[in-house]
Image 1 (cartoon, one colour):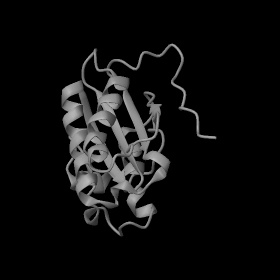
Image 2 (tube, rainbow, N blue to C red):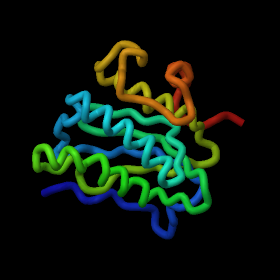
Image 3 (tube, rainbow, N blue to C red):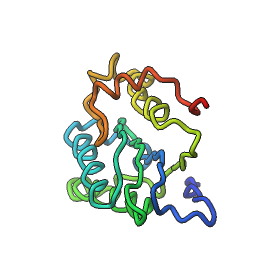
Image 4 (cartoon, rainbow, N blue to C red):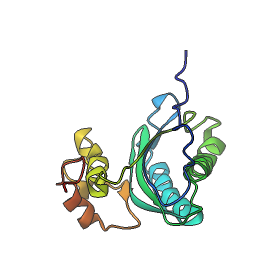
Length: 168
C-alpha cells in the first residue's frame, strides 16, 4: 500500500508573504538526480518558477532522490500550492519525455515557518543535507544547491548556524 498524500493545514490558505520549508520526493525514491544534468535542471526550475509565482528561493538543495527548498512569498497573492504544482510539472516534463516514467511522487511535505523560527537556521539544515548524507565534505563541493537571496559563501556561513528557533 502506497503512502497517503501529506495533509495540508486545515483552513490555511497557503497564500501571501509566508515562508515554507518544502521536501519533494522522487517516485519510489528512485535516485533520479544521480544524473547531474537533471539535477541542475531542477535547480534552475526552482529559480525560474520562484520568479513566475512570486517566491524568493531562500535556498534549494537537490539530493539524489528528493529536493528541499526554503521559499518565501513576495506578494500578497503568492500561492505556495500553485508554485509547488508548477515546479513539479515543469521539472518533470523532460524526465517523462526521456524515459516515460514519473519523476515525483504524489504530494509534498511542507512546513509553514512561524515568526519565531529562524530562516537561516532552516536554511542551514537544508544546505547541510549533502554533508550529512556523505555526498560531499564541504558545501563548496556540492553543485546542486543555490539561492535567489544568498551567495554560496553566505550559505556556507549559514550552515554553521544550529537549526531551530531564533532567540529573543
